[in-house]
Length: 143
Image (cartoon, rainbow, N blue to C red; front, top):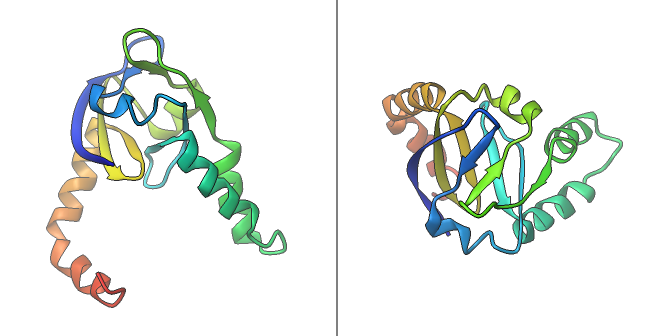
């Protein structure tokens, strides 16, 4: 399970260290893809396979289903760890997420999110400010 918030620096070559406690979960491989809210999603290969199968089962006759599957699948890239526990983020994904040197890696149970630190702080401040209203809306979903 991925939980917590971690600060890491992206180097000039696009390499990002993943927290050591998560590397065991990702040792069989990992996939990084375009996420939502201008961040990247990092999944274990096993979890990404589950998600990819769900996208493959969406009706191709629906434009929104096609668009979201393209967003998540066409933007995906297998990543491997180097000896220092770093992954290399492709340039197109770094540009998509607006990643600069300072990044945040946030654990969200079945995935990690990779954020530019400034964007994460802005997002988090907004979400925390509206947390009561968000909680009320989620109450309708049984949460």
